[in-house]
Amino acid sequence: MIRNIIHYEHTGSTNEDAKRLALEGACEGTVVVADSQSAGKGRRGREWASSPGGNLYFTMLLRPQMPADKAPMLTLLMATAVVRAMEETMGKELQFYIKWPNDIVINGKKVCGILTEMTMDKNMIQSVVIGVGVNINSREFPEELKDMATSLLLESEQIDGNARLPEGRELLNSILNCFESSYDIFTKELDLRFIKDYYEANLANKGKSVKVLEPCGEYEGRALGINDDGELLVETKDGSVQAISSGEVSVRGIYGYV
Ligand code: BTN
Image (cartoon, rainbow, N blue to C red; front, side, top):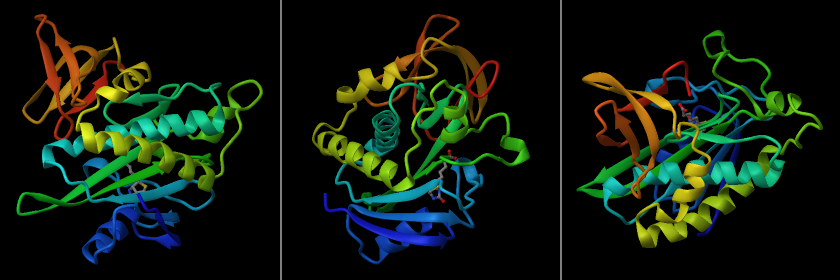
């Protein structure tokens, strides 16, 4: 994949920039990175706090030739790449977990969010943009996020010997390297068998009680892991196993966010 990095000091949202560039014909491997965003977007219409000062905000443009129902797996692929890159740049003193499908958490608090958006034309994927926000140096969070959010800086201060903090650019390069090598395999295999063990080894919800929030109601169960398509397997109270796909459904811990 040819990598083309476009850097802005400030922008609205790197996801919006990447979608605009996609419409203008930009190729797969285009990456928009910004030092700050005024309209950073989170999942479910939320805002993503994007102040300047050494956090990482970027979006990668892909043009995958695959059925649209395979695209949600790209988000899990990116989550895995972020964890690998954090381990590569910071070592293994901190435990990085994935809260299915794609939040990265440390000590039960979110340090990275991923927002994937897909554009279709006549049933064909036109583009997929994957936006990643990593709190590297933040010390303060909006009031409503205080109990749920953290940064690599805050977490590394918690451990003896302070884990080394990566620069944004270093972390970005490492994430892109990890993502690109697994993307090559994924576009051939179209399932997640090749990263399933690693994903599950880092899955925060594994073996835990979870609450599944569906548009039409909610139920509790125990998360067993993922299947080859990246769906979360949840064993319900009657012993049956449900495969949950991301999208409209969200999963919470029984006693909190993870
Ligand atoms: C989430 O809600 O967990 C997803 C957050 C995604 C934030 C990133 S920051 C870079 C990119 N640009 C955006 O506007 N959003 C994503």
